Length: 136
Image (cartoon, rainbow, N blue to C red):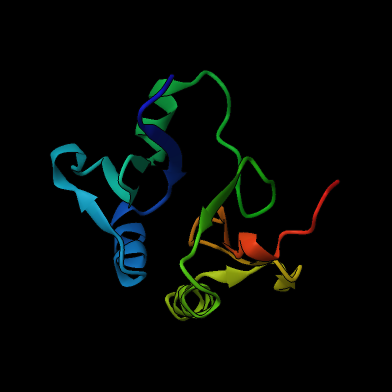
């Protein structure tokens, strides 16, 4: 069983991407960060490797998806509260991200999302499991 998760995402401008995620309050593992890659720390054992296109291509024979027009992945992360979730979304938009869906409130789960500078879709959700409907 895996003990760490590494998402690999192609980015056009590494410095702009680093500034975007730093503005959202995230940090980077500098041990795995250089001019062609940055290790974004998403959680205790969850990381996103932001790789410039040329470097990303060394890991695949396929073309890189244009995330502005196609969806290659939906990244879903939890938030500690609805307020923290809303703040994250608002900050992402103020840093140049875009909204791509309206917020959804399911009672027990609230979710909202943004696309980063390269079009990668980030979904944030707050769940109150005490309000989870009984499925019996």
